[in-house]
Image (cartoon, rainbow, N blue to C red):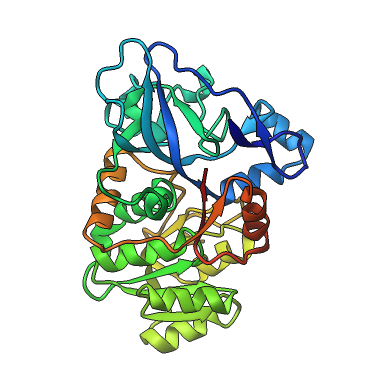
Length: 347
């Protein structure tokens, strides 16, 4: 079968021929119908050899942690899914038995690192292939009649912002304001989730005019360039200097600083993007009861909720479709920042 693999650190991914995998006991094989390309993949492929070694991901590795498919073959003992089922893949795999996993929060598994458990496409072979192996059927969520190509990105680009926003819902009441920094793949979905679940005024910030236009299309009340003038523009639009919540899908020092500048009493500053930066904390450094948190992906039940939002038409993902042979070009476009929304690979 064909697969898109990361073969050598620092080199672009390549399409290769590999053996079609067979499911072992308790496993499921999917015939992949759609796979999503994500900035997390680009981040991993941008690491130096020394940095990559810290992750310990084996090479070659088939990419793709957003996946959807048709159940194609069952391993011994699997009874909870059937051949022919249309499913989406829940990506943040855990041990299945710790306290967090017992709640469906495998994204926060307490033993994943200890046991060497990693998501598909971020540690072992993922969805950018004609077939993929799912270690346990509990990692499959019914897709039903949802179009896999249009909705596969919801397994990360929908689930991640949904989880981040859900934790701030008690604050996002009438009269509140939510700022979304970075309105690309995850950010444009976050705007829709905010509009679907809250009465908050939603403000989009980005350095790209086309992405700001997309933000307005999907429901942002205001859209401003993400620069030094952004706080003044927001103050002019709102009549006040601070906001209720900031969802940062970029997470570099300038955006962390910007989120801090917009924080007031009880503001949630939510660092969602893959990045690292510094921020001052403490009673004399931050407004009272303001928070900084860094959520990761989301729970299995939350993926079901996101897919239900899609079924009701409240959330959709802007997608550009590529064949498996064109997948390297999708990552080039992702790196260049020229995608409108998400890239979806169709084997």
